[in-house]
Structure formats: structure tokens, C-alpha cells
Image (cartoon, rainbow, N blue to C red; front, side, top):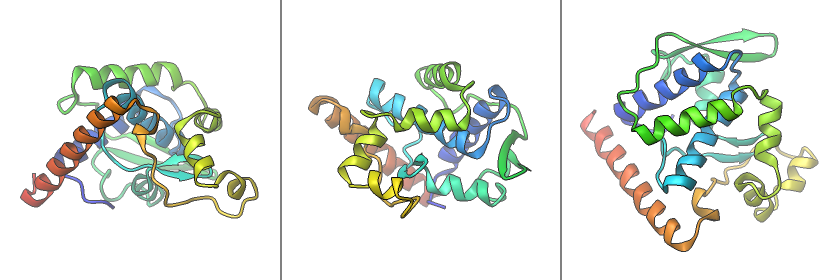
Length: 197
């Protein structure tokens, strides 16, 4: 798992709880896509990172690899205090262990979370994958630019280490603002990790 501060861990855990409380039958894939859409929306509207975690271009859309691994392993590490993972058939579903706490979120972030859940919470995992795959989306344009579309279509690979650049569809001015805020966010996270905060 990437190194994240306790503050970012708390924010991630509660974002996952927020989704799981409001979206029945939240599978691993559905959770990953909703978290991605929250990150994308914060970046595009406010030029600010939501969690500031990297999402990679995978065949099933953008994936935050560390969260994917954490949930695949039953959420026994980073997310253990927040959720439990229930196996149903071939899929893993997320259930909250405690109630959502909004202490780490700004009003703007809460509004983005509500908008994403209101708009996409009723989507199935398959529908969310199709949504993030649509031509013109950041995932699609990144996969196209990196020559991954054909690789994925031919099932030669189901993942890549290509990281989504949320600023790729911004104006130069917005891109500059976003990059500066992302750098500040990442630097603050590393300082908190060092200070064990």
C-alpha cells in the first residue's frame, strides 16, 4: 500500500463508508469507479485533488491499485477499521463497519460525493465501466494515447502502470492550479506520514 497519512486514511475510509451506506450492493468494481469519479469531479470542477491517489489505466477502467489490492485481500489492513468485505459468488462486496464521519471533508467535497452517488450510485459495476470507457473520457483518451485500447480489446493485458492525469483535459491555467494543489497535497501527506499524523 502506498504511504498515506492518518488524515488521508481517515478520509479514504469515510469516503468508502459514504459510498457503501448509500449504494446497496457496492461491489469492489463499483466502489473503485465511484471513488475515481469523485476524484475526477473534484479535479475538473475545483482543480483540487479529492484523495490525491493515483489511478492507473486498466482494462476495466481507471483503478486505484492499492485500494484494489486492499479489498481483494479482504480489507484486513488500511481499511479494516472502516469496512468489511463480503464474498458473494465471484464478487466482493463492501459493507460499512461504522457510520460515516464528515470531519475530514470540506463542504465542496461533500457536495461532490453526494452528486456522484446521486448520479451514479444506482449504476451497476458494468454500467460504470462502460461510462468511464466512453470516447472522450480521461480514461479513454489516456488509453488511446498510450496505445492500450487494442491491447485491452485483444485481452493481451488487463492492466497497465499508466497513471491517469486528471489535468489532461483542463485549460493551461486550470492545469497549473491543479498541479500546484496536487503537489501541496502530496507534500503535506508525506510530511504527515513522517510525523505519524
